[in-house]
Amino acid sequence: MSKGRIFDDTVPLLAAAGIAVDPEATRSRKLILPTGDPGLRLIIVRASDVPTYVQYGAADLGVAGKDVLLEHGGDGLYQPIDLRIGLCRLCVAAREDFDYAQAVRRGARLRVATKYVDTARQHFAAKGVHVDLIKLYGSMELAPLVGLADVIVDVVSTGSTLRANHLVEVEEIMNISARLVVNQASLKTRAARLEPLLSRLEQAVAAQAASAVPS
Ligand code: PRT
Ligand code: MG
Image 1 (cartoon, helix red, strand yellow):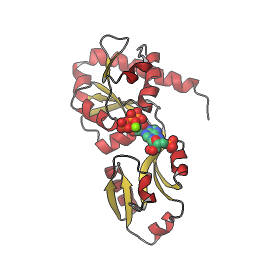
Image 2 (cartoon, protein in one colour):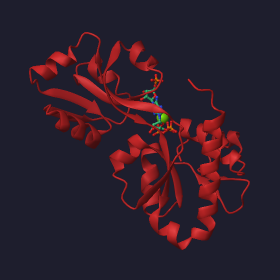
Image 3 (cartoon, rainbow, N blue to C red):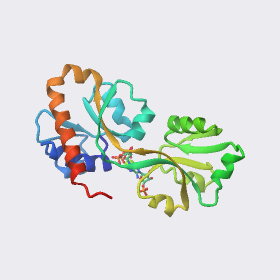
């Protein structure tokens, strides 16, 4: 898993499933962390690398955002559990003074900066909007401000980063949450080990959802 919000939200789920993790452990800069279960270790990687580690079986299990999984393609992965953490939405955002609806109506060719190149390509193709895609690796919010792109495709949670940069969400593409992913071969060869863990995690997710205050 990645060390940011995914780690922070997964640790309580693991705890509820009976697996203790020291939340301070990520500060140590160690990339492999022990858990209370001697047969289970956590591997800390970049969020976008999680599907790759699991696809090749370097990890049996992973926790990755649907945004990351869509862009990866999901080859070799089962996605059995929606963990209902890391909630956000994938959206198109533009400068406050950019008339997105009008640009789309008049068939303008849009420059789109994003790290989600494939997902963005599919979204605009389905709408019949012509785009030039510009691949970025971070801080997409900057691109429209300095004339690199007309719009960005990025995940948004509170919206405060967009607001702070005078950007507005002009289109929602989809709601995003993190999924448990499982190496397809591991699930067969290590079923006795993995199945009980999966059902405990499933129960932990259900219990967390049941105790959440409805919004
Ligand atoms: O090393 P790397 O940065 O790749 O990983 P990380 O350790 O930071 O990753 P982590 O654990 O944070 O996981 C990333 C995943 O969290 C994404 O793939 C999403 O599925 C999910 N997620 C949920 C988010 C956000 N919410 C989110 N807000 N990922 C990123 N953001 C960014 C957003 O793009 C914006 O730039 O956070 C910024 C602040 O968002 P606002 O709207 O709250 O201001
Ligand atoms: Mg990050």
